[in-house]
Image 1: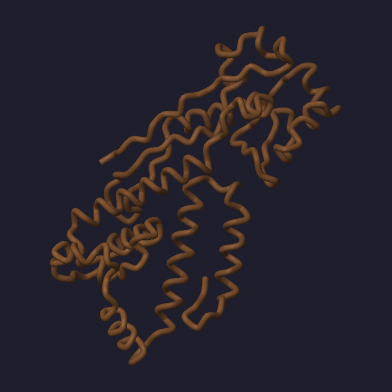
Image 2: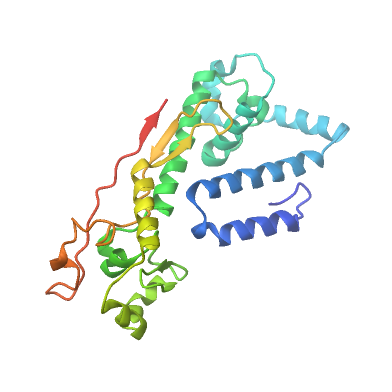
Length: 275
């Protein structure tokens, strides 16, 4: 969040830090909304710093800059007359220039000269990239990565980083890397003698599974009137003996002969498009 003078706005930097620190705890859609809002605040601050002759000089310099070599052969695509910029166009431009590095140089004025079908295609590619990021960041690991956590986790869980955390059906919350210590703890062993889970927790897990099956729609343009976009499936709750007793009969509700936990390995649904 650097300003044109090279200084960092401490307020924007603080917001960025808070968003990044709490990213793993935020619903997938909220993180994108927060980052969009932060980007808009930063851009508004930058625009407010340039006024009068300085603004005119900046526009002249920008228009004198030639496009990257890869676009010099595509001049005919930019023949449409410039139009007024609405919120829908602004949000589309913001997403494309943020998600597609090769288009980060495109100014808002230049964006409005690109043919509509080309802007639509770029917006689609940027939206697909967001969906792919969601699938990486907000989808539970493969159940075989840690069968114990997969069988006992309430909600989403992560694995492989120092700050990865999870919540156990016994009520414990902690670091994923300490799962074995928790499994052998007195607290968990006392609970394991009956393996009873409250109706409230079971309902919460079942609702998350329903949400996982519905999927998450990443709209092509949040400001557009329609709801077209990419629907991705994040799988934030693994099925277990409380959510799906038909999958885990009594015989597989405890450690198997090899001393591990039987798990359900899911085939994640492919994302699809809604127009």
